[in-house]
Image 1: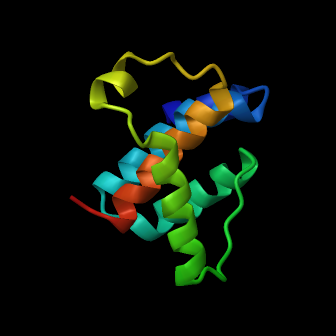
Image 2: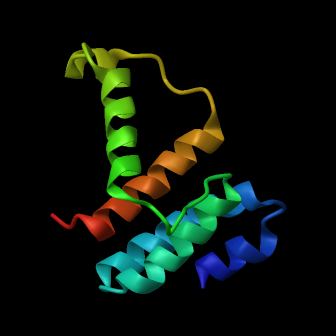
Length: 107
């Protein structure tokens, strides 16, 4: 009921993000991974992320190597004590990507 009020009164997409986060966390806790995944992908696309269903191992490996080069030489302390990301949309993107990882790689 609270989420309905939030969604009805939201003036823009960004106003809905907190509600989406709570809604998806609830879905995941109720083992509705498929439904949660559909919502996460929709939200990520709205945030400017795109997903390809034509991924091959070579492309995946290239992304892993690229990411590794970005963090190579950083310690956990460097990451923890680093500057906060200024781009709010990117912070939201990372929150929803993290939720997607929980679906694909459950603890």
